[in-house]
Image (cartoon, rainbow, N blue to C red; front, side, top):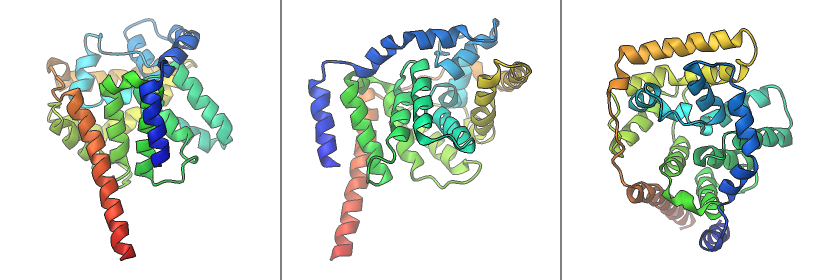
Length: 284
């Protein structure tokens, strides 16, 4: 592991190319094709393009504020949850692993090689390539991303996705993900994102529906009648968020980038040190 981390650090300092920015330029046609494939030509189009193509919602009048204050923005931003849904569907269809990896990377290219999406994609593609514990794999993937794309050291979304991936490894796997969402709510609040008091409830009740139903419906909405079902479900979500006045709250993100990266790396360091101490006690 240490050899890999040192190699990644050397790559970080010496790499003259922002690898994933370069790949995004080379595959721009895929991203353009995705955006132009939208089956909607109304306000629904923005949300569809965000879910399927990785388009930002921050410029929209309603959805940007509402999803941030509700804590649901992480599901609409292309991240690990999208890739996990893909993996689940492909496993259900018994698709061979090499085809699964190909599909994941095509989707990653379509969504513009975003920092959270690419980190998650690398994690899934290389999960069987490291004979390491899960937290060590997460650390290695994080450093590999920085080695290949050094300017992600200044990306909030990259560090947040890294922290979320690390926390997921220690959450109890209850079906409703109550513990996971509670931990996320507490962590994001601690980091300086003053979420609505409803955020925890919405993430426990609505997040699984959005991730496992709304996202697949968005993919299938190119076909009738899935487009109608998608609009109906999206309209219901919009009504709920407006009823709770989620779009009326301005949600800043107060933690500094330096502080966020310190939290991620210090947590890894603490956990790695505690594991080494435990192993030392067993040997003695």
